[in-house]
Image (cartoon, rainbow, N blue to C red; front, side):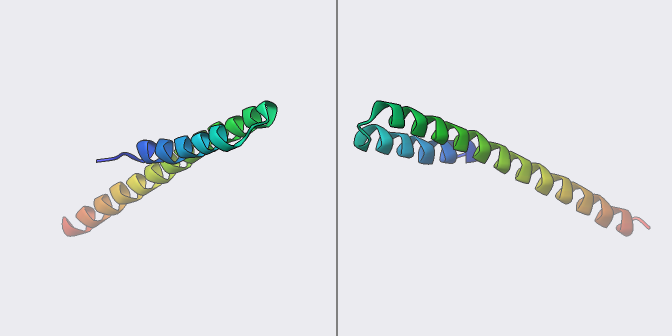
Length: 71
């Protein structure tokens, strides 16, 4: 099973491969690779934050349901 980081890396590596294959200007290529790297870090952080929020919501909702059942 793929993790979210593996999926993000696969997509971003495909972007890098495209840049390396089709961009001939070395300075432009270098800047595009830096942009892809920045996008990778942002995407991983965004997914991690979203998962943390979802986990916190699930935990709190589950605790609230069990607290009502015990009353």
